[in-house]
Each structure stands twice: as C-alpha cells, then as structure tokens.
Image 1 (cartoon, chains in turn yellow, blue, red, cyan):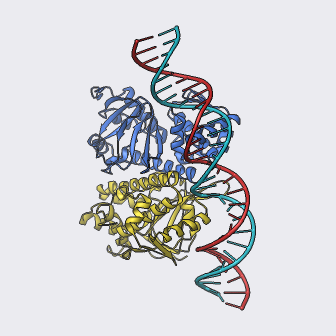
Image 2 (cartoon, rainbow over the protein chains, first blue to last red):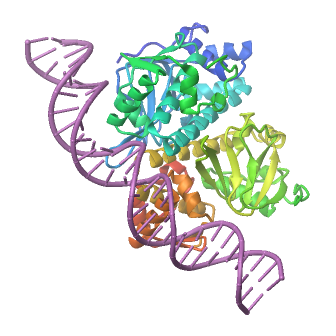
Image 3 (cartoon, rainbow over the protein chains, first blue to last red):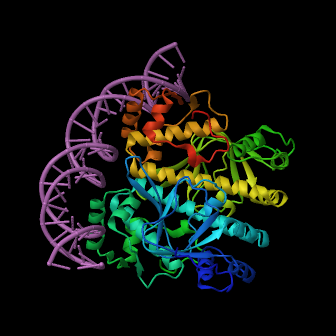
Length: 255
Length: 255
DNA sequence: CGCCTATTTGATCTGATTCAAACAATGTGG
DNA sequence: CCACATTGTTTGAATCAGATCAAATAGGCG
C-alpha cells in the first residue's frame, strides 16, 4: 500500500538529494561519495500522521530515511506518559542505529503525513564496502544524534519550562536551516502543544503558558503549524543555545 | 606526572583484559579480535577525584579507557546547575565519539581517584584497518551509549524522583554485573548524594529523601560508597527497568 | 451546522526546591 | 590522640514551579 518502485535509477533523484544534502550539512563529501550515495536503492512510501515506523522489540532489516514531513522518537512510562526523545526532519535516518543494534529499543513514528524511503541494511553495507570512508560519515551522524540526546537531558533535567522551550525551538530552527528547509526566520512546525510538552517533559497546559510567555516577550510567533523567530538573539539567550553540539560542517552565519 | 610507559607488550595485560571484557559484554569477539585488541598501545595514568579528562571545546587526539574508578559526563547551565549525563565504569571508553567529532561538546571527569588508559586515535584507526569488523563493535558501543541517553531522558522527563533513583540504580547494578564488577547484589558506588541528584535532575535534599524512601521500602541499602540491592524485583518495578536497551550479549539471569 | 481536536484560561493541589541548621563522618595537623 | 576543619548526610519549614482538574473557546472539516 502506498509504496512505489525502488528509485535506483536516477542517481540525482530528489530523494537521494535530500540525503546528500543532510550529510553535507555535517561533513564534506567528494563527488565519488555523492555518486555512490545516489545509487542507494530506496523504496519510497507515504505514511499518514501518527504512524509508527518501528517499535520497541522490532528487528528491522532496513533503515528509514525521512524525505518529507516530521517524525519523532519516543518512549512511554508504564502509566502512559510519553517522552519524545528527538524530532526528525527530512534527510534524517532516525533508525540508523538498527544497523548495529538488532532489537529496536524505542519507538519511531510520524507526527504528520510523511514520505519516507527505506534502505535495506544490506545496501548500506554494500555502500560501505564500496566507499569505506562513508562509514565514518554515518557513524558521525549517529554520534551527533547522541550529542543531541545529551543536550536534551540537560534541557529536561536542569532548565525551567521557558528555557526548555526556547532551546528546543533554537535547535529545530538551526537544524532546518542547515538543510535548507527554513524560510528566512520561519519554519514549518506542524506539532501540537501536547507533542511539544511531551518533548519537554511538561504538561500540555504548561506548554501553552510557556509558549505564551515566549510570545509575550516577543521572541517567537507560532500558529498554524508555522514558527517565526522574532528575536533570535533573545531566543538563544533564553535557551542558552550553543549550536556547537550539532557539529555542523558549515555553522550558520547568525543562527 | 603519574604516567607510565605504554603497555604495548603483554597482549594479555590486565588493562587490555578490562577492555576486552567490556566489549565481550555487548558483542562476541573471536580470538583474532582479542589478540589485536591486546596489542593496542595504552598509556596508563592515575587521576585524582574530580578531575576533568576532557572538556567542552577540547580537540583530543586520543580516547580514554577507564580502568579503575568511576567517571561521569556532564553539562552545566549558565547559572551553574550541573546535569550528569552518564556514569562510566571500568572498561568504558567514554569519549570514543571524539574519533569522529573533533570538538568535544560536553565534559568528562572522574568522580573518584581513577586509573585510565589513553589510546591514540591513530592506534584505533590502525586497529580498524587490521580488523575491519571491529569498526562495528566500537560503533555498536557508541550506539548503546546513545540508547542509555534516551532512557536517561525518559527517566528525567517523565518519572518522579523515587522512580528515577530506582531506575538509575538498576542500570548501574546491571552494567557492573555485566563486566564482572558486582559482588553478588552489592556494588561499589562511591558517589555523593549531590552527584546522584545531578544525575537525576533533582536537588540534593530531595535525593536524600528519595533514597530514604527506597531504604524504607526495603529495596536497597546504601552507605559508605557501597550499594546493596535488597529486593531486586521491587527495585525493577519501582524503576520500570527493562535492560533491553543495554543490548548485552548475554543478558544476566535475574538482573 | 455539528463534531472533533487543539488551544486557552482559571482554580487548586503537590512534588520538589530552597533556605537554614543540626548532625555525622572523615581527615589533618599539632 | 584530640581539637578543629571540611565535607557529606539528615531534618524541618516555607515557598514555588509545574501538575492536575475542569471548563470555556477556537479552529478545522465533512
């Protein structure tokens, strides 16, 4: 259902370009790398919102490249409280870890209708055999994800709701900018306040009040799934945001 | 100061054995792997308690293998609040990431007097060239660390202080057992309550009260830097602990 | 229009912080 | 071996950030 033919033909397909663009945001690739990446067999699929891609206990034989939309990783408490661990944007391979960790230990799901491409583990291993230097590239990507988790821990553990929200928004804006998915100081952010709260470890009600505070302070505006930063420096200060941990190859000029 | 000669001779040195033991807790090695690992040049050093090994902004050319003692990674808020991100036990290479992320983005320090061994990045790359399958082993280790971060986020974001403490203690006991550093249901845990609080994102005072609650419920006893689990099943229930995320090669029988 | 989901507001409650101080343990130098 | 300093643990009381409960309001959308 909703699947399409493997897009293994055009090495310059938009799907491959999405991946290349992401990798080039964190590392320098040469032409041979790009060419080899362009031959990765992809199976594209469209998924509805709120659909799990992999779940705890799964043992997938493929990874998932997000092409369009928005996804998140999450865990839940036995009493049903959800904690979102990371947001994933187009170009990300959120479950790259499954290459070396057979059993998935968290959940990955879409937040909005999304287009994804599946890449067989075998295809990645073939790629690594052909271009051994790409191992370091993908490894680096997983390490940057880990760095984001560490910042997330600091955020949830030691900042108040206002600061947490500011930091999260800074991170999202920076990441979307780094892969060319921001429109000036605006980004698409089609998430509910309940989802933001689950990411920040706070209640929906308090999420709402924290957002209102950010708005009242003239830092951002957020409505209709679209976020606009009104005062980047102020937002950075509020969230104590330092993008170093994102290890971008080309740090953005002012954000 | 306090350094020793590279221990590159005896492939079966206790230092190398520590590393091998750790890796074998998460993966199966063959004899050739062990032999090659045994030839890794190590530079052993003894460090006092509360000594930073690497700091944000550093660009080390080596990794650090913890041999004896206890270390932690941490970040701090601008107003000085510290958040501990992970504890590291003998056998761990806490800053393995520096192999692919030039600039360190968090801090790593000892909690007690510790013995560490430094491994030059070049030596690791040589090892990977000789035994390419070890790339996956070390990559896997970094991925497991990331899985621990994810659980840490859930812990700090969605559990109350009592549950957080229980979960943390379960994790530490399980990890120490997996590398043969537990004595039955007792482990060395030479950390202050302030440090535990920094790991859990709670104040020292509340850390104390949470520990008292765990004691009162007959789950653990903790004094003089030594933790004894009195009721493993109860502790697991209190912390909702499921060790899957540690991806141990040989899950422990009952803990 | 009516249904369903999301946002917003108000009021109340509580887990955890903060402040302050007592107490215990360990170590140091004389 | 004791006086003293230092660090860690414990207790109590006041306070607060954020949770919870409840309900109103505002948007989509078939």
